[in-house]
Length: 66
Image (tube, rainbow, N blue to C red):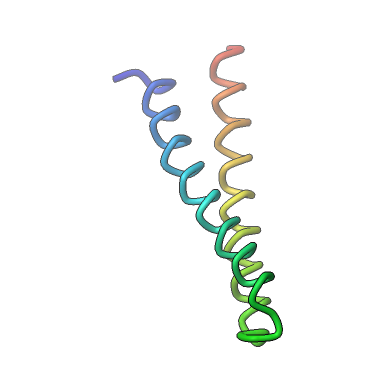
């Protein structure tokens, strides 16, 4: 498997993880004010997941343009 193919597979997994984090944040927002103390934790998980995903996408773009 090439580096690009491996990175694409990793991005697919990270995308699923980021989408789940997004849905967790969405679900939390709909349930407010229940569980309001978890807002920062859930939001941080979503932020981190999308930050990693964007970083990997940028790496893939750089690899493909090399």
